[in-house]
Each structure stands twice: as C-alpha cells, then as structure tokens.
Image (cartoon, rainbow, N blue to C red; front, side, top):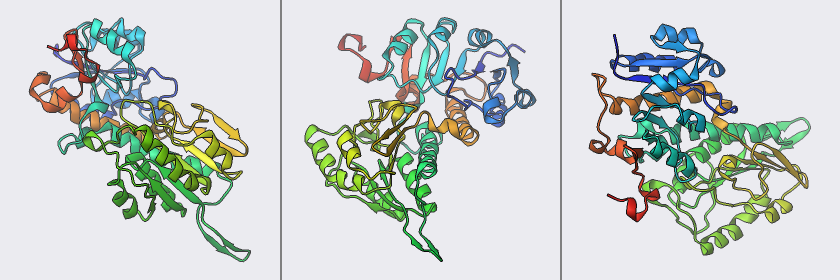
Length: 380
C-alpha cells in the first residue's frame, strides 16, 4: 500500500544527543493514522531502543539517512537539521522540531528558501490544550533534575543534615535561580536530597510554587512576568536591583543552580565574576543555561571552570543525560502534536485552521510566517 504520509525519525545531528524523537510505543500509535514511519538504523540505540523494537512496532528501518530525508514527507526531530539535510529534504515537506528561530535565523532562511513547512515546538503557547505537547516543560523537568544531581555529585559537602557520633553535619545551602519548570524540579530534587533550599525568580507568582515545595522564596521586589507566563527581559534598572539583592544569597550558598531563561533569547546574566570571586572555596555553580549563553559570566559551555576554588559547570543538553525518560516524554509530546497535524485518515490539517499549529508555524510555502522575524514588507 502506498501511504500518502511517511514520517521520518532520524539519528539526531548533534554528537551530544542521546535522545530519539519518537519511541516505538508511540510510533505504533501513530501508525494507526494510516501513515508510514521510516526510522534510521540505530536512531534509538543510545536511549535503549533497538531497531528490532521499531520494526516490531511496524516501522520500516533504513540505514541511509539521505533515503529517509528524501522519502519522508514529515521529518520529526528533537532539534534542528544539519545544513546538509536541508539540501536533501524535498520542497513542500514538513519539518517538526525545536528550531528556536530567533537564535538560528540562517536555518530559518534556508527552510524558507527550500519551501519546507516548519513547526517549532518550543513556540507552542501555554494553554490547557497544548499541555500534552509542551516539549519545553517535559525536557526542562529533566534539566532541573540533572542539574541538582550534578551539583550534589560535584559538591565537597553532603546535602542532608546528619546527626552522627561525631556530631551534627549541617545541610548544604542550595540556591536555585529561575523557578520555571526546570528550577522547580531542581528545588524539589535538592529538597529530596536533604538540602536547605532557597529559590529566586523575576516572576513574583513563582513564589507560591517555590514555597509549596518547602523552599524559601527570595523576595527582590520585581515582577517581570511576560506573555504566556514566561519571564520577560529585565530593564537595566531592574537588572541592577536584581544583582544587588541576589549577591548576598549567592555568596552564602554551597551550591547555586541557574535555570533562568527568556524564550528565544540569550540567557540573562545573573551571576557576575565579581560575585563568584566572593563565594567560598568548594562552592559549586551548575549553569543549566550554558547552551543559551549561560547565566554566569564565567560559564564555559561543556566545561568545568575552577575559579578561586569555585567550580562553574556549564551543562550541555542536560536531558540527553537521562535519555530514556526524556525520549519517552518528548515522544508523547510529539505524538500529541502530530495527532492534530494528521487526522485519523492520514490527511494533513491546514495550519491556518488550528490555533496551535499556526502558533508554532515558522514558515510555509516559501514564506516566513513567524511574526517576530517578519519585516514590514513581508507581512501579507
């Protein structure tokens, strides 16, 4: 049977990526929509899924990446395609991934040029209907967990309070900066490890979430909540106020975990080199935003910097370090999204007729549709 839609699942382009965009269980569910699924050999191996499992689910396994790119008319990936991939994907195909169009304009321009309809899942709005598709939340939860575990592993101090024959060991002081999904998971994980935890966020409403986890919320007197419940960028005056208020909390902490971000933009700088200089030797900074430029001035992406006895750890793609569960969650998000993009008869939905599809549509039919990138002359 010649199925009209072939969904392609690939080995991810990045060497640091251990996840897969769709797991066999969800592939089997998607196949019920009268589509075919092409899976590149070894796509799921690094997160525990063999080619045989995909084959048993009903997928076709192909060794050649180019063959999948040229035959699948819907490509699903975790991130962005390689430039070489874009030369192979046929025009009028569909790409579903996390493009971050404001940060990777060159890729967007190539997608427009190649007439590839592109959906960027991180642009989904925070609405009730979109919850099951929210890749940012699912992967951020893994990021927060990993950040807390990495901090505990590298810290020369024990996390919990211990009462022993040798006396009482005080709990480690952990500060989490950024109380979105990642930050709250870091708070919860550090609390489970027995640490004394404080957290800060520019959004005042985040205080209730922090306190509900048994942690202390640091009040700075700012409220920088932007559209969709995400944090907005601070003004220069607000940045100065934040810096002055946060510094004392930073220098008194044994472990600082930073998860502060503004969607689509470079991570805000919240820990200066001067603040690090004042921290105690043996303190740890885990910068979970290293991929977006880092929250600490001294962060080096993928490296551990030792600055006067303080370790600054620049995490790269933290969800990839827990690839089994991270892949399962991402896969469920993707399945939910594809379920509105492809109907039960295997036909594609018109993005203009669905608020979620149109919200994360970056380009289609050779034209840019993502409003923040549109020039006045492009608007039609």
